[in-house]
Length: 143
Image (cartoon, rainbow, N blue to C red; front, side, top):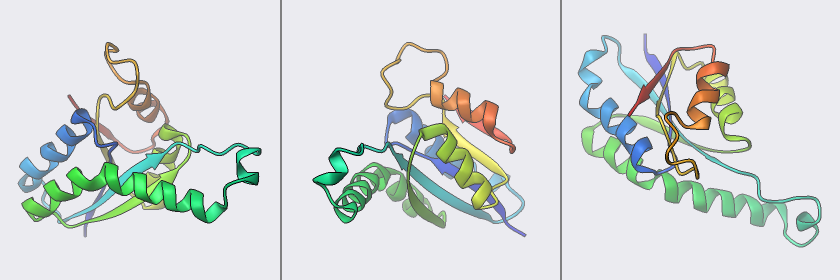
């Protein structure tokens, strides 16, 4: 039996704190972990933009940006020996995170309290708050 954990990250300091938390506490779990590392890219193309940019160009852009934001988290997990799969999603942040957790059968979402958003002074980031309210599995928030 494995414990499936979704670990969304945007590459921010808060998101990397969640990754570090997992690597430092991996021994707390009785079951082996199946970690799904996720970066979500916001859609950038409206109908008019799609007339000038191919879907393949958009997909390449999302992949390139996603891999860039996953780089530090992947490095931390690899250094600590935590096995993971990485994913890049496109869509509204909170709903995409919750959908991935459901699709992958994750039993927990582990994430930072804030990300790259503009509301740096907020007590709890809007994405974290939305995930907390929408998720059907436990959400562990790391400050």
